[in-house]
Length: 172
Image 1 (tube, rainbow, N blue to C red):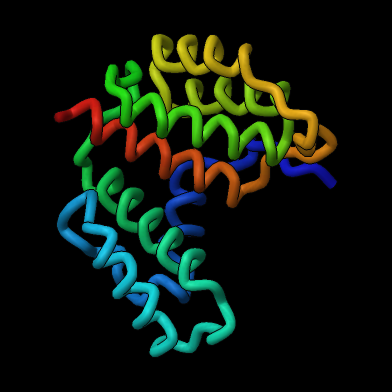
Image 2 (cartoon, rainbow, N blue to C red; image 1 turned 90 degrees about the vertical axis):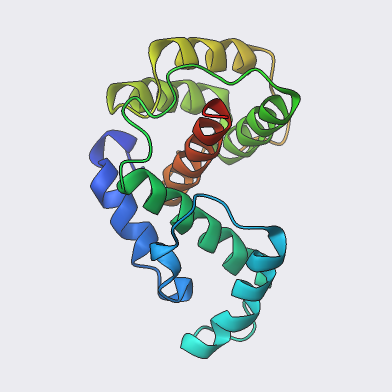
């Protein structure tokens, strides 16, 4: 059964992110960003809270980063839409293409376009940001994309992480 992104709301995605046992209670960090060294430290200490020791440190570090970014959004660091326009910098553009590549590989270009419409409706993206992302998306396709798949709740949680990161670049 396909998971429809319209069945999830922001609170559900935040709860799914913050409720992860591997996060080790780090959802209360004061800043939106921590150095990569801190991410490595978080990954090393995650085994103390009952995680599977065979779990890749990169997965733990990524979940920690997601929880940190979502916690910053939750504390009101950014107003809706979280990303009204895309930031104009090379680092932002690299981040956008990384995000689009992830989404297209997960579910194909058509599902990604539907997801952007959903993100605009729930206030993650402003109209300008959504239109620009759709323009970028029109030039991206990959022969190994999982077009038969739909984006699931974890994929949307990752998308919200990218929105938070791009929004932080917009505020600089």
